[in-house]
Image 1: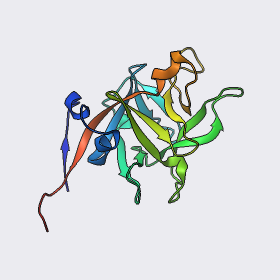
Image 2: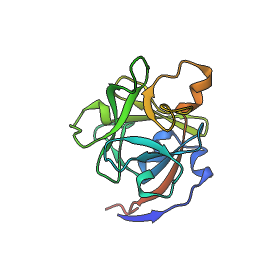
Image 3: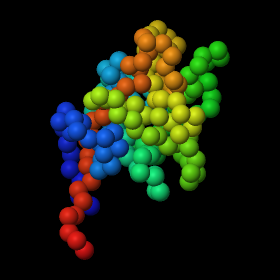
Image 4: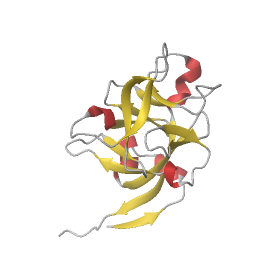
Length: 178
């Protein structure tokens, strides 16, 4: 399979399902609609943060389709870790749980699996580990630039789970019949 590098294309998202956006993608960037920052794999190879540099390799996530599922993906960082919804709270008393890079994802383990859900021209990623959504946090430290998975319960934070998906590399499939 050959690869093609794409620029962001708004028309790609108009009449397709959330899963179709990912199905032919080799790699993507996820940009928070609320904060205008990208989902970034930190160089510590464990943390996932928000950053402004969408052109960095740390902002690219390799898409893997989960075998046996028509609606589930895994996202792999440039460091080899999978985007994972952990069970660890971000802070004591907070509702959000940490999202990390994890190298140890077993087959069928839901923590590293995400179901894309389309909402208008945006996408939400629902964790298979509890059904919470990938959320870009904003505000003052210690919340600023953190990433959690949670269910937004306030109108003010509903947009924090919405993502623009930029397909930066696609799989070119042969169209022969065999």
